[in-house]
Length: 242
Image (cartoon, rainbow, N blue to C red; front, side, top):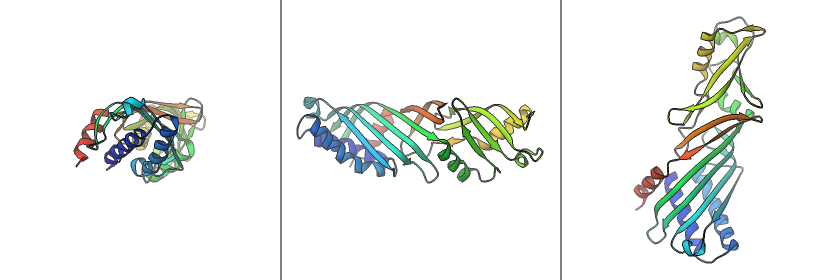
């Protein structure tokens, strides 16, 4: 169903844009596309789009680029991203047949703040007592209650980083060091905690099959970037066409 909405979105963009030329027509396409995005990507506080194309190419169903940006996008019942962006390049649509011929590339980007990540973790890991995270300027700290780790009754703080694996749809927390008050935590305990909390973010249920290629903690945000396989989108769009 999401791929079907993508096909409708791109076809509509071409149909609207072939009706005229100039930036005013591009704005018309953008206004028409925005209402489709909640069904395509998920509910959001706000969506905006930016469509670009040469008038001559547009008459043949070719868009140079489509930029989609969402704020507060609920991509699943548990996960709301602070921001979500998609950049489609080289889109070729058969406007008569209503079919997607080709997409050269699709870039994906997202940010997730501390509050959103903690809501997500509380929903997914209610069995890990006291679980919460702090997102710093360059790394992340995971807090957990000691009964999970079978240690003394004082909080455990584990600092580390986040990295994608399993095709880029899962993000794992990688411990870099931990302390119980002022006492270092043994390495086996760090591994135990990682196994309990990982994957710290699961994107496999997103409506588009994203591949996260880079995950970094920067300026209090978890920042993700990657791609969506354009070939998979085209194949799925063709199979969804009547």
